[in-house]
Image 1 (tube, rainbow, N blue to C red):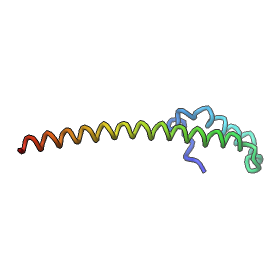
Image 2 (cartoon, rainbow, N blue to C red; image 1 turned 90 degrees about the horizontal axis):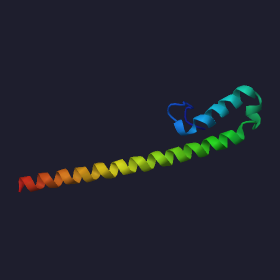
Image 3 (cartoon, one colour; image 1 turned 90 degrees about the vertical axis):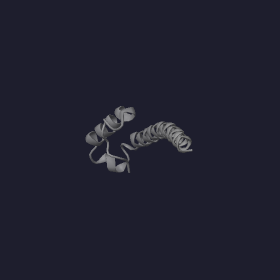
Image 4 (cartoon, rainbow, N blue to C red; image 1 turned 180 degrees about the horizontal axis):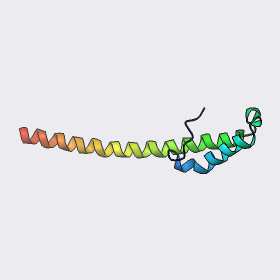
Length: 81
């Protein structure tokens, strides 16, 4: 199972998504018998890579926000003292 194959949500995998959708159109019966399996495997790998990139970016952003929050808390603690 894969997420919805919308090109705007998965720009890194756009080419593979288009190939996969074309394969499903070109092989309406064959898709049930493994005709598009190689593309599906490529698509899954691409989604994993895309997710790893997003996860790393989100982690970096959360570190920045956490540091900013700690600095604000420290300022507030110093101002109250």
